[in-house]
Image 1 (cartoon, one colour):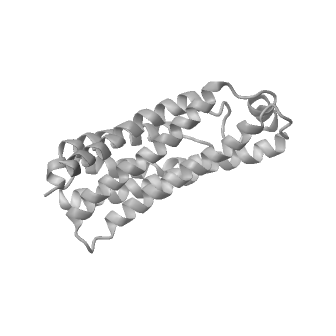
Image 2 (cartoon, rainbow, N blue to C red):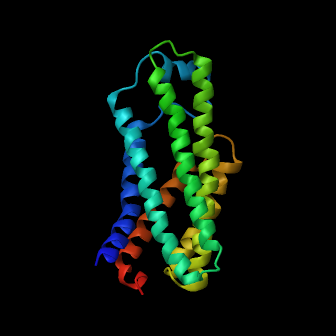
Length: 217
């Protein structure tokens, strides 16, 4: 019973991630576009301390990152069981998830450093550097890691039938779409593609929740 309960909790973590990530983004949005000018940086970060909602949003994103890793471990268990002990694609999917969690936290740390010093004599050049670094994690490194996670998961799901075929094809399609923000300037298409990632993880969490008994064999 305990194992089944934990499997269901871990599956629900994917649903929780989607909710926490969306809420955290709305509350803690940086307030400026990627790679903005020093004047925009000054208006957004330097002249005044951030409102309380920003700190709440950042905390929700931290919780979201850990919820995502909890869910990814649950998905890895399902994929590895279907692929077999010698399977490497399931391990690749878990690697992508761990990298994504690391990039989320690294990008968040960059903006946290700005917010901590905002309104306290923060130099615009320092703020611009930290902002550019944070956006680089979010719109370059993170999509690459998520693409690895979704792509490997989709392949295992389609090969083994452990996931519904529509979910496998959808994961593969989103993995390909994640290449758009990586290779294009700015953040073109990023928010639309990340919304698709949220929907995929949400749907996968529902599927895994309903299949907790199957995971126990």
